[in-house]
Image (tube, rainbow, N blue to C red; front, side):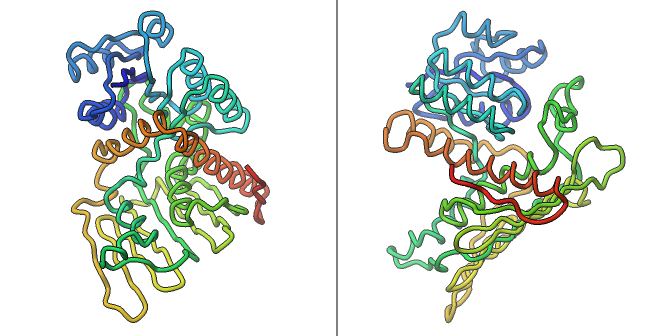
Length: 348
């Protein structure tokens, strides 16, 4: 049994991470650290007996931990991850893992030197709908005589539409997603990162080749982008993304096209269309965009994290996926800054 602590007890920690940790069989939370007294009180109420600290430094001075679950805002991730690694702990970290090459480099170096796991929370790929889609893409169900397989993906379109950015748990810090120095960017970072690793899933983990992007602000007075469009080129095709905090509706939808058919994604359902066969509809029972907190998606994240800590062959898989996401983010920003044309992505 791994013992760990949550650093940063905001909404995602309270409503998504902690409920899943409480149900985990291979790991448990014994402590939290958060600078706000009301958030430490919330942690104590949610997990009686948990030991609460005002700072990570106080936490590390008092506890011996196998892992740390880092749920602080993006700009603080590299420093927080490196400190936890130097204390000998594995790290689970909310997305985005890093927002620049320097930060990611410091994380990768510390992970190698400490021989510990850094696991980026890419929970959307573990949503029931996306687990079904990934099984279809991999042809896993074909062997059981069930419908599967559209051949290699050639195009993936994905839209994430929201009416605003998500607000934080503390009134004095509730607009951190709208503070560039804390959030590291707008919707292209926040919802974009989810879209980037879904692109990786759609194209079988292939490394992206280039990105062309446009970032702009629809809502007056915002200090960062609330809308983004991007085209990501892969060896076998391309992905097209549209992301917005100013859409007026809350919805996710997309299409994955392959050589032998297509998969339609519409919030709560996926439809498999294959050449010469009847359509197959699978309903997840809940829309992807129904709400922002999904402890049932985080349970498989915990299982995958624990697997990386125990199986040498699995170690580093999450970190490599996060590096590809960062490469897309940085190339997209460069393209948007230029105002035209794709930006090439080099080797990892």
